[in-house]
Length: 407
Ligand SMILES: [Fe+2]
Image 1 (tube, rainbow, N blue to C red):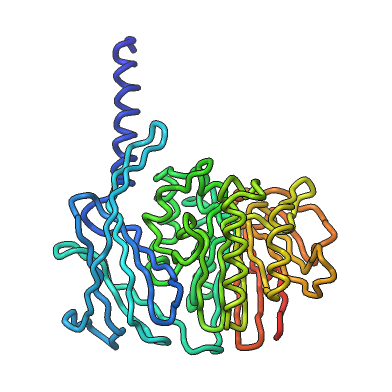
Image 2 (image 1 turned 60 degrees about the horizontal axis):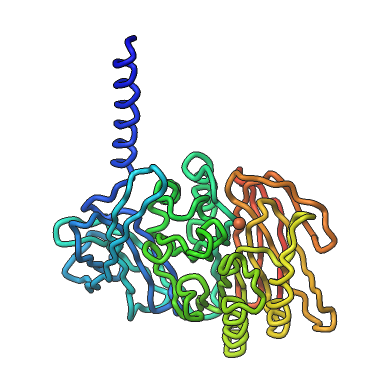
């Protein structure tokens, strides 16, 4: 082949490859990346967010109680979305410009099944079904994932779909950070949304950010554009540090990836979150308290130790008798009750887990009651009034670890 032919062959294969990639992940006028998020008070409100191209400048969400059969759209209550335009650039990858539409669905009834669809006058999504949590102290479950992070389409998809198959009635799904590998990279979010697809539209999702969801000190611009998480935390940590009340549970997200993993002990991100956490635990009326945060209080690896996190937050957790901490980051599994302050007379149960295929080896450390390496896991946590049953499963559905907490 002559040099000129070779040049054009290579040029067009790269050009068409890029164009096809861009088409695959570019938004259109039809809603995609539809996702439910829990709100501060999940029994009476729910948040939904979706994406379109910029030709759609207004978004609507139609909601009604789930009927037994065909849908009468005249029965719907219509909510108007807040629309935000974001431009995503990542190295040489195609630039993506999206309109993100975010709706807070309010004045819902607790313990009911609703249907909704999102879109605009000309393009609607399919109808999705979701449930609001029932009365306090009725039994519910949720699924917790450690870091998905990599191979989201090819390998993490198996985990979320297996978990959904296992407990499709769960109240919500919880992520302890590092949902993707490179903050700001739209092609990775495309894989994350493909993996969960319609599950995100039916089951509310809750996520705390990890270090890979930050680019240095800057949160991935996708985070607050494509998720509508509570903004009841300290100023500057909207959507990353927050609390949610769900049935008899107060679920709290501490943003341990902010300020480069809270390395500045006297920095705003540390001091603001500490005083906020103390106040939301002080005013808590829920029976169970679970904290989620990306960095583990106790690491699964010998050479890793998040001392500042433990030093500053553990006394607050123990003072208010927090039940459980769910974290990620270490790409292995470890679980146990531990304290650095024996005089406080309360030991919190700490878990670190991983759901994606990136793996590190766990070392056997004093604090652990159970540990393991090279397993992709999901956890089903069931709370029935005074009893919490925790079960960790490998991706092929085998029980790997379990414990029970009682009040
Ligand atoms: Fe991490």
